[in-house]
Length: 424
Ligand code: 7TS
Image (cartoon, rainbow, N blue to C red; front, side, top):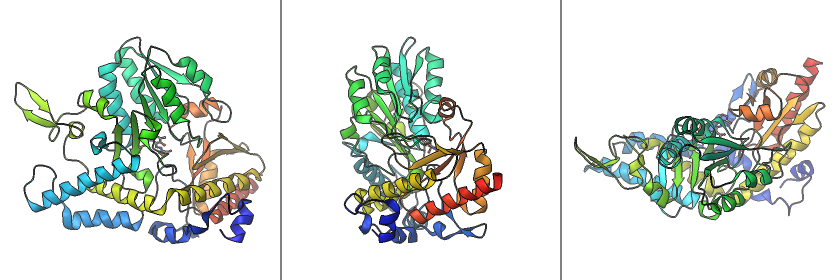
């Protein structure tokens, strides 16, 4: 770590051994980060919405369309076999990434939203009935609220909500109180997109499993910051999106415990998910193609696997120390800004700094920062109940990825001082 960075982060080299992490070398892999926006060098701090893509991913996608494209499965010709092998190898990569027991437990979807809808639709309609309860938390993204609400409306089940405290941590005792024989699913976010809270998933799973309740984890924001091991967490379902993980949009995955996926009915009907079809009767394929009706996003799957190889190739120890240093530095730098209040100060936090600044509307803050080339997100971040909990309409959110630097945090802090001066 450089002396300047050490000084800035106020951390010793032992606590934060990031001197082996070449953030500028990593940035070179992301051409978009060299852009100028409104005449200023881009500072991209909207990574929770979507991450930028390294050249390796762009090139793998291009190579697929240039040299490998054909529809997969059942084709006897060379290209179909090649594309099939690449698609299935991508599944193996994702299984390894999440440490699933087998690639049969990985279903390709269009992303976290579809993964959750798949479980709510297939598992939910087969196993949840009137009088049952689905337990979520007060910090869920809309995509882990609405599918369960729809299920509850259709079945007569009840949605129950684990409250959160003023720091943005779930109130664990309340969670324990809410668990009962009626609970048929716990669906909870691993890392909150609007607060940055890291939830204690392993502990949550242990408590839920004591009642034989399956646990679905929304991992959209977790996998680019934390090493995730579904066997270690013990969860039953884990949902991810490629585009939040330096991969292409329109592709993601659902991990599901094999015994559960096996027992679940298909979610959509069509080609590729069947064993045989007649007008009298259709039988379905084995896992995981039972859940993958129609021609899938082959290029996306290959791009996603390339992104995962790229990202894991850097090493989690380096990544986590670097990101932790940048996040801590951001908290320190922004704490010096008068009238700035953080929203979300959980004990364990990653990726996100959300705040309100005086009585200035976040949209105004975002617009002024944009004039300085700084991309942040403002609004409710698809977590309206979080805004309600903190009695605010919106926050300004800076969200970080492996390529962000403390210099960029300085630019953000400078920009915010500029906003304050304008409104004084
Ligand atoms: N869950 C969480 C925790 C998220 O942050 C998001 C997207 C989703 C689910 C949905 O992911 P998708 O890939 O299926 O769309 N979050 C955000 C965000 O914070 N700003 O834009 C999208």
